[in-house]
Image (cartoon, helix red, strand yellow):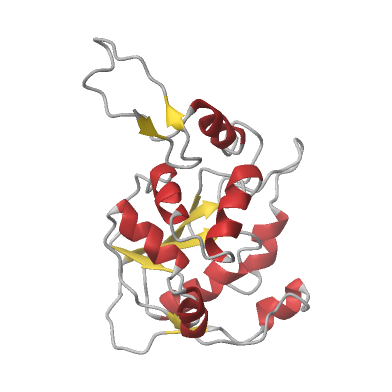
Length: 224
């Protein structure tokens, strides 16, 4: 008898000729239902670029329209889960309660998008935050997924921007930098982050990539 990777309760599964050679389900029925409840509904009316929920008669995504005033827009956001319910709980406990084991849970639910790219670049955290947490929340999940990536971007610790308005944060200095010479001309980059909210974080990172003459950048987020 094996246990659910998330709640660690035993999974009772009757062996049959149909499932004998099939890999065991890592999640119990109850936990699987929780994940199904937060799966992003792509049938709903959403922005085709950032997947933001739109009103039925809306033709313009206000989020993308706002970002386009300051940044070169990403070509596409890929994301399977909403940042609510079990996803919000798992990410909170993983990042802020430092429950390292939950990286394995996230890795079991996430799949890289089937889209062409030349390089995967994770969005970094300040060194001080990673040292305090003892791990990086994005790259640890990618490691469990067996994904090859390049730590191209770096960032410094700075005061939290939550008190600033959206416009002020968009116009603030770029928190990211690249400290080595790298030729990205004509490359397609897949940025990876844990949560996509306003899009400001990934577009600040994308600004550096565009300065390096990438052809375009895409974004894969664990949740939105």
